[in-house]
Length: 278
Ligand code: C2E
Ligand code: CA
Ligand code: CA
Ligand code: CA
Picture 1 (cartoon, helix red, strand yellow):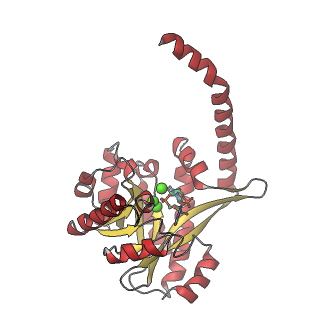
Picture 2 (picture 1 turned 180 degrees about the vertical axis):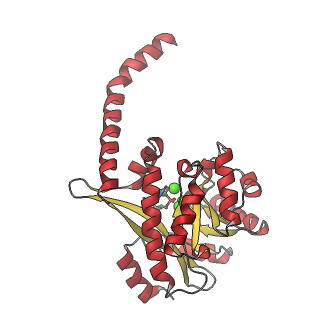
Picture 3 (picture 1 turned 90 degrees about the horizontal axis):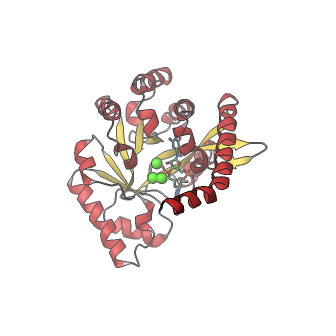
């Protein structure tokens, strides 16, 4: 095994070098992106399956740079979590989202909310809630208009600071949503332990729905279980009419996905709302 290990090491070395070189490059580009304000936010509608009305949206970061074009979040969010830049990126995201939420609040119905994605790393910061509260005050955002999405991956390490922050957020009246539910780390005990109000069923569940019986049974069981525990359920990655009908029939609360609309710029979202918002 030792020899194999050595061989493997040699074999993988060149690749690792180019990988880490690439990461270094992205890291320095990220620093520049933060100071040059290269991030924007796209919004994807959340559709209530009972009323067929849009009840809000999820804010998703977009990084555009003239030379490099668009870099998708999956290529820089995990990295910025590792090198800590996510804290500054998250601040910028929050500022941009709050500025938009305040403007939109003038037109919305009571229940409208915008969901923000927060990384594990951000939630581990001792002053996370204080900083967020300051931003809320600065923009006079209604707390009921924001929802915070955290992935269940995050809860795995069970850091006391993260747990404290979740409890603080919930006691402030900010809704918490458990993202990517069912992606392999899930534990139903999270739902009992932490103050979530919403569960986001990961899109991997819906992939085979409704044609695969087991996938369908699994999805509907999770919806019913979540409801019996008092959680709201949002299904992610709804791409087809069939999935939409299935979710509606199963009593799922909210649908999000390409079947309804892709994530859109502020302007696109506003136009789309005028035409399809219900
Ligand atoms: P997520 O939170 O699970 O976000 C949903 C992802 O699914 C988005 O990818 C969205 O564009 C995509 N999506 C929506 N509908 C469909 C569909 O019908 N089919 C398929 N195949 N995909 C769909 P996106 O925007 O590339 O974001 C990827 C991930 O990056 C997000 O996953 C989230 O974990 C992270 N992320 C995005 N924005 C932020 C942010 O502002 N802060 C942090 N910390 N993470 C973010
Ligand atoms: Ca999310
Ligand atoms: Ca998700
Ligand atoms: Ca995800």
